[in-house]
Image 1 (cartoon, rainbow, N blue to C red):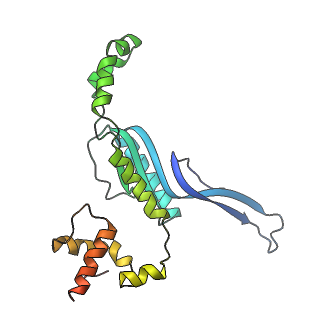
Image 2 (spheres, rainbow, N blue to C red):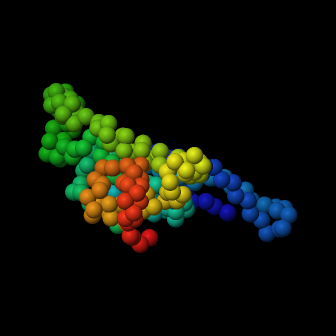
Image 3 (cartoon, rainbow, N blue to C red):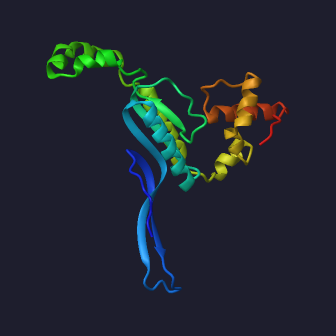
Length: 211
């Protein structure tokens, strides 16, 4: 029995143990251990098209194993023309410096030690002009927080919220309805959407949408 695995730069995972045998009492059995990822991320200095395609393939493998898993691509610099990830299993591509990689004709000046010393000030200024963006890191952390937050509801939260089922607050159709009615903006959190929904209930105009 073999298990196909792939190393990830970052993962929140859980160890699993597998045991197989042709005997009911598991005599002469084979045991294996592995990790399944709930959140996985590949971290790149430069993201080019080849790495993007590799990430898309890995994301699909991860989600075939754990359908509810999240997969992210993190990079410092974008080294390709932007491509939508909506048709892939990648959840998000996060560009930490919000900038493109230096073009090849500029990078050629750094190919030797002499060239790197000569152009050191230029490169330092380039790094200073494109610092790491804290908002991008916070976005990544917020996605992790959504994955690890508790799923069970407290009675106190249910009674104070006036409704029992909270899954509607994360429903894309419901979110689009709020946008259509000018009740929400694209940067609002699920908690803010919840308050919009309660306002609609109080006005006795519940939203109509399909799940």
